[in-house]
Image (cartoon, rainbow, N blue to C red; front, side, top):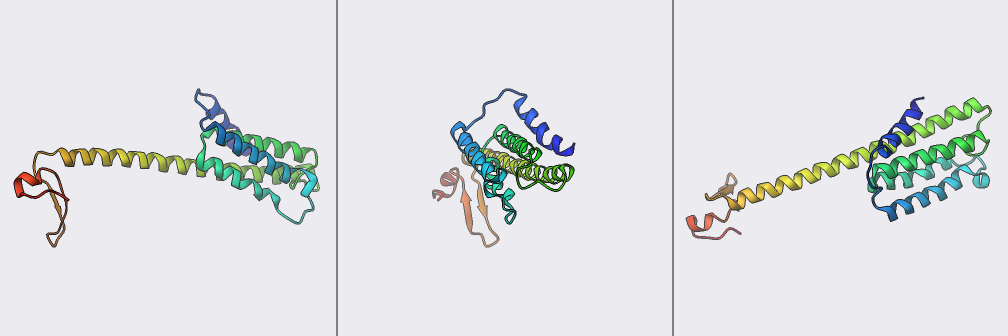
Length: 178
């Protein structure tokens, strides 16, 4: 049940409110790469049991997490989980084990790991972008305050070397800030 919550809750929350998919061309390209990779992983063409092909999915999911919206990320995870479940229930794919219960447990662990990894990466990237945006705004406000201050303001180090000076320094000290 936890894996279902990890997959469906973000999907429902992302798609339950109005917003645009954003970056439609890139989203479609990522989904196409995910579909092609999924066909390689979950169909019997390359299933000889020697290679852990389930990891081939990660580049497309990382791409989605780094570059796309929450809707695109949750669509990729939900679609991948649905395909993996469908194929495993029908006895195809790398997660088919001796019994159906064993297959579903292994598949559940796989889907949980890809969901958590992708959503955590997406969250970290989103938070970093928000912090960078706030920093840019803060720098803009600081620079505006610095440049428009009517008093001469100097920033010097312990050796009296001037690192920054605002424009009001020129009338007071007679030189332009560089």
